[in-house]
Every structure is written in C-alpha cells, then in structure tokens.
Length: 110
View 1 (cartoon, rainbow, N blue to C red):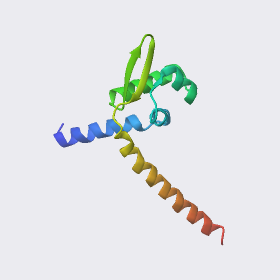
View 2: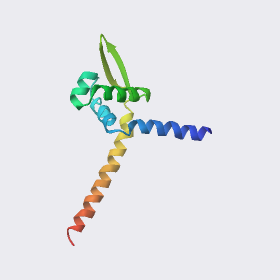
View 3: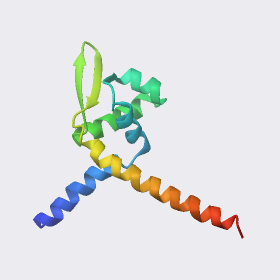
View 4: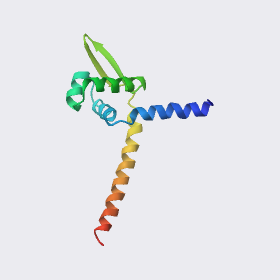
C-alpha cells in the first residue's frame, strides 16, 4: 500500500470510529466530565456490554482514555481536539437544516 493510501486508510478508520450514534453520545457526555462506565450506562441508557465495545473502540482510536480506581474504570476525553473535528460537522449540518427549512417554507407558499 502506497504511503498516501495508508494515510487515507488511517483517516477513514478514525472517522469510522466516530460514525456511530452511541460513540458520539459518549464523546459528548464526556466533554465536561470524567465518568465511570456505570454512570455512562445510566446517563445514556446503553447496555453495559455494548458500551464497553464502544469505549474500547474510542480508546483504540485515541479519543478517550481510561483509569482504574479499585474495580471502577473511569473514562475521559484524551485529546480535546476531537471537538475541533466535531464542531465543523455540526455547523455543516445546521447549515443544511436551515437550507431545508427555507425550501420547505417556499413550498408552503405555492
């Protein structure tokens, strides 16, 4: 694999990690706090087994980090620059929504 192809593969794998609603919810939940698995399960109403898989993928991608205190594992955002990636996506989606609302508004005028 050429080095440019490898770079694209690495980027695609990273973005695939973000491409799940539960993982995005976890990232947003951890934006302002460190939390235990139990707290995340309760807050996001996820199954613990599924959450563990999502957290593992996020940890492998370098998005979250974990620490263990006794039997409790706590997760937090490893690199806050992830929000520099997510913020422009939210802006693009807001722009698309406004454009759709404008079109729908014009349909009502017919």
